[in-house]
Image (cartoon, rainbow, N blue to C red; front, side, top):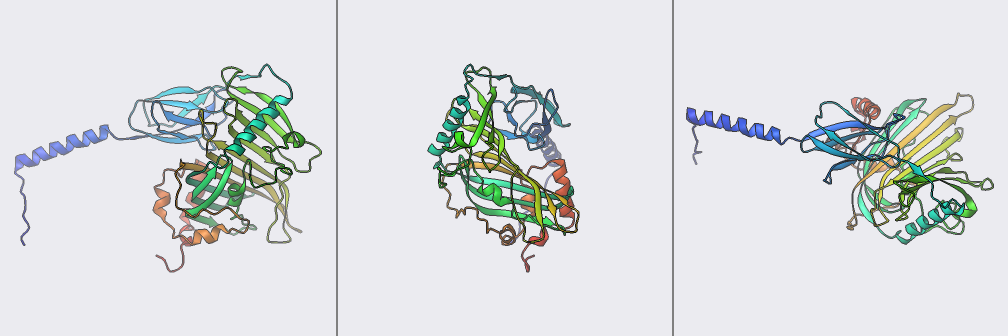
Amino acid sequence: MRMSTFRFSLPSVRFLTLLLVLLGLAHLGQAQVQLRGVVRDRETQEVLPFASIAVLGTTNGTTTNLEGEFTLVVKQLPAQLLVSELGHIRDTVRVTSGAEPLTITLASAAVALPEVKVASFPFQLVDRAFRNLARNYRRTYYGRAFYRQITRIDDEPTELQEVVWNVKSNPARIEGTTLVQGRYAGVQAPISLSNFSVYARRYGLFDIQQDSTTSLALFSPNVEKNYLLELKGILGEDSTGGVAEISFETRPEIKYRAQGTVWIDLETNQVVRYRVVQPSFTGSTSNPRQKFANAKLTIEMAFKSAGTAGVAPLELMKMDLTTDLTEPGKEPLAVNVSSFTYFYDQSTTPQRIPYARASLTDRDLDAIRAKPYDPEFWANNPVVKRTPAEDEVVAAFEKKGAFGSMVKKGRK
């Protein structure tokens, strides 16, 4: 069978060239633009994590990472960005160029105290939020989560773990996960914390399976018995609505120590954000000579906006452990383990996936080794957000080929 050919005459070639140029210009006119920048407090210049950046009038948006940084792809410029953050006045920013990083500042929102200042008011708010969590505990969300953990010893990175999970969650906690992709790298170090993710996967504001009569959680029927609460103020335009900011700490007679801040929507009783510090955190290592001293665990949780629904899934979780690793005859080592979990693609549509609830017997490295390492997954995944410092750590491990070593033996 002969293959037919088509020959261009000279005028046809010129016409085709002109057509391609015009099409190319049209394509450039429709090209998307990637914006990057940082959001800061206007007065203090401190970075604002968890700030929301959205293209006005669309569903296109993102959130800042822990360093207040963000990247956002827009269809065209100029673009109007709506920027908001709990505790700050939302603002609209007009962007005409994506050539340079943006610096967006937000003014602090006025904090108004309600007319009713009785000591019972914050307890009433926490109790309403607790009942809201309990009432909606069976509401289930399905999606994915990106988890990154970096371990530092004496401020030097010794471990890096990144995973993407399929996640089943509710308005209070993660219920179960299954691994989609994962990678791990580490250098020779006195200690490994490769199973630190269990804290993110097991922690929650409320657990319906726990005995409520003995619970030490803030969101329980025992809040008045176990905690001291103080209403710091109400974030919003006036004192009739908005978000209540409440500080809490365990009573002196309670052996368990915890203190922090919770933000509760006054109209919907939804927990918007939660931060707790546990200075009495205890842990152990497989080496009986090693001990943790001065351990402190900080946990932060942020939830998506619920609107009028009063209930919404997790958006972000952060776990940060600082401790001194001691061993007889050796100088103490300063250990810091920081993890960040970002939830995305969430819906209420059930998925046919075998989710597993986290167990203290889980071994993250075993699960990661069971999956072939896919470098393209990490190179082209828009969900994998990093700060410049994190980029430096990741690049250092990638240069050593550490991630590829996690592939099963015998695989190319």
